[in-house]
Image 1 (cartoon, one colour):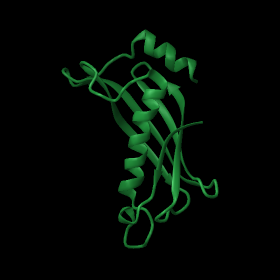
Image 2 (cartoon, one colour):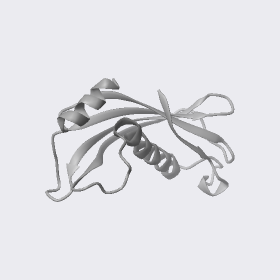
Image 3 (cartoon, helix red, strand yellow):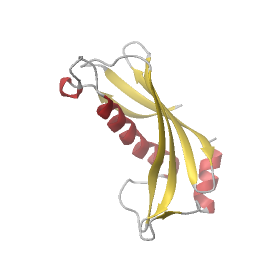
Image 4 (tube, one colour):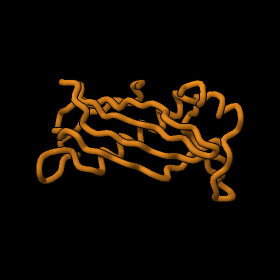
Length: 133
């Protein structure tokens, strides 16, 4: 897995029970997905013409609590390349002790922003992705 994002859990990101709330796990994983696409395709995150990447499925497992002040690193690896989709596995690591705080398996599709539908991943991008499996 490659490190794609680092963050700190701030007190304002914690819920009434004192640990980071679900919305901020998802925000960190979402930020990591943009960084992962840059790592994979040199994608810059800006609206790049008529196409973009759209999340269609997330499976999250929460493994260990994240407290305010915890330093976190999200690592990612490509696990599957489909005709229109990529499946990526992420791990959120607590840097102080190496514990896995959470995992996310996400499926994203290449999306035509004008036609509003999934499209086939072009050969050059597909080749780059397959090279990373």
